[in-house]
Image 1 (cartoon, rainbow, N blue to C red):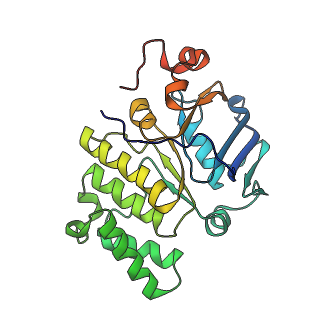
Image 2 (cartoon, one colour):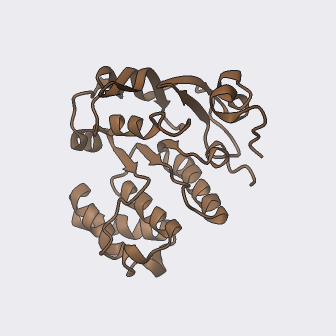
Length: 258
């Protein structure tokens, strides 16, 4: 598959950090999930999370949005400590949206009804709701699908719907949990382009994780590899796959992006 990302943001003249996890640890009983983990996201950056099953990628998302509270460590958004702030507060004040791997929509509502239902929760102005819904339907080419119940949409169509739902609130930070899972090659390519366009056209900072390493590395600026509850490597895609620690923990010695 061709490289989607034509440029990568690796250096910022004036770095503005939007999100930081500082020395975060989390245990489920005696089982260690994350240990002393540090992670940061800068404005306008697309960051990828990679690692084997059970390493804590989805757990990191749940900590960022406030669904889980770490046993130790802190979460900062715009340099504000939000570790004890509830989900709705982080979503509304700091403009965070989350696209889960599964679900994220009302099965028995049409595509437009889904957008209308969520818009009533995140947009106060009724006129603005309709404008925003129509804009997203047009942006993601959903016009012919807007009166179809969500349960009857294809996997790629559902993914576009859920991303549209996440964008209703004009987020500054978008979290994508395994967006490429169970999608065909062309749908993945289209979704990669959508992700890059959200960065370049909407100035949204994005964190995504996926087991499809090549697909993820084709659309991120930087990526990290997680192992044993920690970040063991962070770099641009081409440099990351050459990192010895990343190879030993995840890629192996023969992995190539293309």
